[in-house]
Length: 164
Image (cartoon, rainbow, N blue to C red; front, side, top):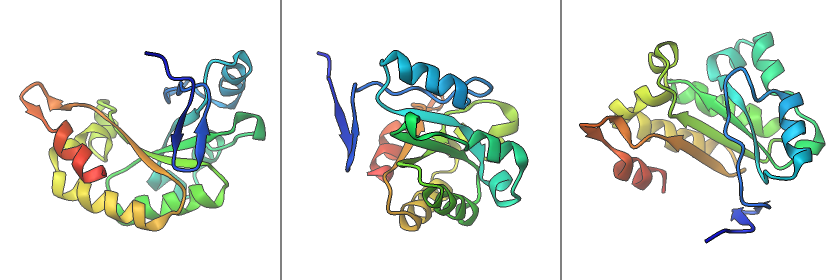
């Protein structure tokens, strides 16, 4: 069954396809190219480090550049500090993004040590992060996550319940 549209709170996504954030690929030029093809209803930035945002890192600023043509647009964050992620989410909202997303899927070692799928191994910390981020913004807040840390550590149901 194909869905023509979906809604995340007040954000209409039409068509109901989302461009996955891809490190080194989903810059503003690529996102606009995909948007012009007409196949994606929601565009996402590359994931951005909450720590880099708070330090006003030039690379983070470049990842967060977007044009009105890209709307609706979501910024994806990663990190492991609840307060810093909440502050970064507030900055995302202040920049005018339609949604903010937390990356819980990246398996790269440099990301896992400070967030990404590594948070799937620390559910109490993840719950704290989700609560802080949700409380920090009014825009829709989503998460992208794996079924678990490994085949023997499946936590998708617990994570979905926390997110709910």
